[in-house]
Image 1 (cartoon, rainbow, N blue to C red):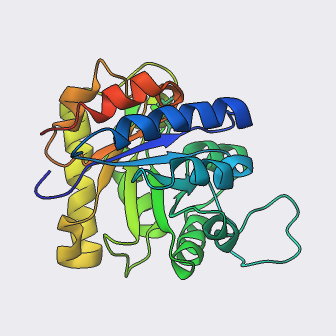
Image 2 (image 1 turned 45 degrees about the vertical axis):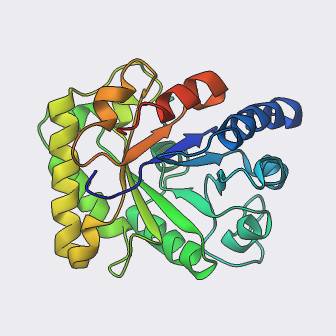
Length: 253
Ligand code: PGA
């Protein structure tokens, strides 16, 4: 952890209507507001349709809101897309970029993710940049190479800990209930930190590297305690307030 405050980020993906989304956010906000101190930062990333409503719901609780993607342009003829400025205007402070589902469903390249990260920064959004290997890549022993390449090409060379968070998410662990061993997670996170040092120097020690992929209340404590793991990006378990809070409460004291 080394002085890095853990970030517990919920990725709601394409889930949530106004009633269920607000009810979930209300539960989280009430819980966090009732505490005298918290040892983590909490972020929820609802679908774009709910960003402004959820931002209003959690206002004053200390919980941040993020989008799940943004376009590279500020505005224009891009039917169906959302700009970083629109997210910021809706109350978002963060945006997830390059999630493997977007890389797979929309063919997003590292270069595009890099451009999106610059667009996000221009509007003062913190980019949560996702990287991670597929099962075939893990099986053929190229995990570290794949992650280093995604990192090199998606993360801006002048990124800082204030405008970028990295999320390591093995594609095969997302939504499957499968997780790498603690040693494997530790190895990849250490390699990411090392690669970041080569890219951004000492700033790498401050940058948060989240783990994501089937993070649950029953495995969070050991994973969040690993040296270079600075929080989690949570999908399925972020849709239940109790589970999401239990994961947050698993952060090392
Ligand atoms: P999961 O999703 O926690 O449901 O595996 C994680 C993610 O895709 O960010």
